[in-house]
Amino acid sequence: MGSVLLAIIMVWLLPPYANRLISGVVKPATIADPTGTISGDSGDPTAQAWIVGWNGHALRHGLRGLWDTNAFYPDRYGLALTDSLFGYAPAGLIGDGVTAAVLRYNVLFVLTFALAFLGGYMLLRQLGAHPAAAALAGAALAYAPWRYGHVGHLNIMSTGGITLALAMLARGHGWSLSRGYRSERVRPGWAIAGWVVAAWQVSLGFGVGLAFVYLLAFAFLCAVVGWLVTGRPRLSRRLVLGDLLGGLFLVAVTGYFAYAYQQVREIYPLVNRSWDYVAVFSPTPRSLLVAPQFSLPWGSVHTDARALLGEAANEKALLCGYALYLLAFTGLFVSVWSLRQRLFLLAGTVVGVLFTLGTNGPLYQLLHSYVPGFDGSRTPGRLILWPTIFLAVLAAGLVTELARLAREATLPQWSAIAVRVVTIPPLLLVLAEGTPNIDHPDVPPPPAAMAMAQAPIMVLPSDEGIDNNVLLWSTAGFPALVNGAASYTPPNHQAIRDIMHTFPSQPSVDRLRRLGVRSVVVLGDRLSGSPYQAVLQTPPPAGVTRVYVGSDVLFTIS
Image (cartoon, rainbow, N blue to C red):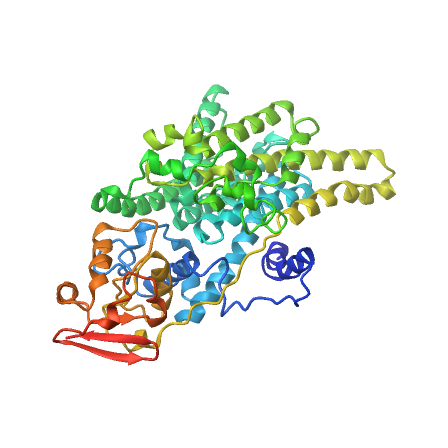
């Protein structure tokens, strides 16, 4: 409950007032309407709101057509052109239509911060950190400035299941950093829960889940080797059985989703990202000191620094937090963790950063060339999550040690106050630096002509930006749509867009007839400056009727 309340305050309630205070604007602060505005921008978030709605729609109908979706008609596996967010399908069962989809998305957006905080807190408590230190780690993971470069990507923001699963697995296996392995603390039920949460995290998508799966496999191999090296000590049968069942469940879920994405690879071989393409989205070492646009303390200050990062600058701005850097660095010298553990955390941070740099580092090419799945990822900077975790553990070790020293250096009646004095300010500092300044633009209203159209439907103009909105509008009944937007545009889908530049010419109408398209909706207020602006000036051919609906036009193809 505390993590949810903190997320609501940090993400939704506090930023308008904090922004007003920092900017000195006299205009009253306003809280965004969660039913009429959408977090981040009106592009990718509207498509992700559609994905959650579609998953719920498919779940309600026995998962029929889950991967094909109502979009990208008549192509198949449209859902596998991006992360599926299937783990949020139960939320998609609540409500219908555009307003419900927007509200649902905004609620999930806030909850991603709550779960990221909770996961970080629980992981550090299990590792042996003081409650305030664990809260600091949770804050560092949930409100790291780099996360605001992905406010339009719910799949990338959804990282809380990773740390929560690790916390459950560590608890189930009776292991912590401070005390090591204790057989009497083994809890098979927690281990099974950890595997289930890990599988749920994978079901959200491979954007952050791919590295998580490989790291879990690596940890499993290390545990097996460690067990053999230490003389194969006796293990709890219940724990072994729980690990076997839980691990198989994770493998089955991963295999199910991997199969769908493999089908896309076979249908569209160009979906793999070339090394030159990855280079465009690869951050530089400078990126670690630059915050994205939506960071309240640093967003405007780092405008020029972001410009130097080039294309996709927000996604390449990887600031974990100056306060976190300072605390983690100090934690290398003063910490509750052992020297060996601190060196391990430092090594993990450095290696993680080298992978994160993509083509600008020495290690990422190993993943891209030899590890299945990574050749389909375009943004190495998303791996910054793992250095952030290591930094958070280092920082928590420092704060835990400060709490111990304060308790021992003061009289018993003053120890609680002394502990708060040394632990609460670092937590507040991390939270203050992690305050976002996220936009909440109005949701584009669905055109009345779309409600009158007969499916399958094509909406014009059609491009990545507009089709994001069209997908959201389709949550009102989920009619079959030619439109679609994803991280990859299939060649035949682009070919349809291109020939529709001449609509309603005879060749374009013939193409639509072959596809079985019944209606074309033209958005009058989106035509200016687009390749489709001559659409309304061309007389429709025989068999095509045209009806004006406000500023929009509905073409019906017989």
